[in-house]
Image 1 (spheres, rainbow, N blue to C red):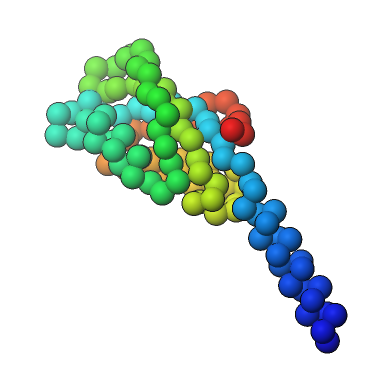
Image 2 (cartoon, one colour):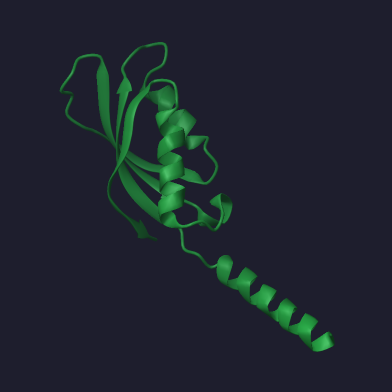
Length: 117
């Protein structure tokens, strides 16, 4: 029994050490939001910044094809330690869903492939 328990503990320690070494990553996304004074882009960006494990690295203005809407290109850094050890795809899909539900966001979609940092 001692040897079995020792092996289980070694495997668990190995898993914990490997799991904490998952690298952070970043991705770019296009965000379209309503350009209203009562709930504009700054409010939406503050809501995104308040999500656990998310850092907005930069925001660039994009072309405005429609009046009443703001188009922005965002670079977002994700802290894997805070968000858990899920796959990059799972984390990004979850974030996209959460951000699309923020009041004022008309659309939020990832552009390109997430990259490790």
